[in-house]
Amino acid sequence: MGLELKCSNIEQELGIESTCPFVAHGEDMDELMKVMKKHAKEVHGYTDEQLEDPETIAVMQKHTASIE
Ligand SMILES: [Zn+2]
Image (cartoon, rainbow, N blue to C red; front, top):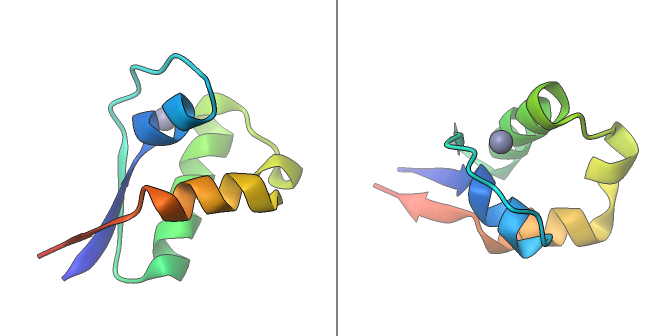
């Protein structure tokens, strides 16, 4: 069991054309967010401020899926 979050889903929801193949995996929400935020910063140039935005966090949570 775990959680996964597709980067392209987030960007589409935020109105950004995305072909990013990255999928974050985590045991729980904390771990998943850590992985996703690291990726967003390193690859897409997001700032901590942008990633702490409640709207951005809500989008990430919305697209988080449980996996077996
Ligand atoms: Zn990405």
